[in-house]
Length: 86
Ligand code: SF4
Ligand code: SF4
Image (tube, rainbow, N blue to C red; front, side, top):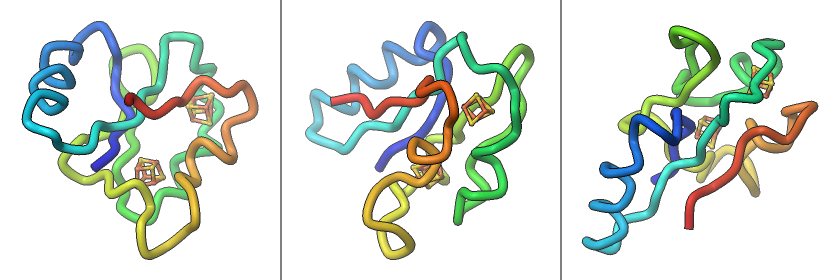
């Protein structure tokens, strides 16, 4: 499962997921310009505006499986500030 979130706040959470072998969320980093391009593209309404920039709710993000061949938020972001965590 992928989700876009603030890396600094959720590093421990992602590490825990990695240890148990779960898929990890995508991340929106602090360079996000709040352009709003990714929000309407998400099939799960997982992206919302946080305190300073957009973020993804880990529990809602499904990596776009069943909707798109690849995470659509990453495809539409004009500044490539979203990435998957491996
Ligand atoms: S667009 Fe896809 S990859 Fe991005 S947050 Fe939504 S479900 Fe996850
Ligand atoms: S498309 Fe990229 S820059 Fe625009 S709001 Fe989403 S994450 Fe931020």
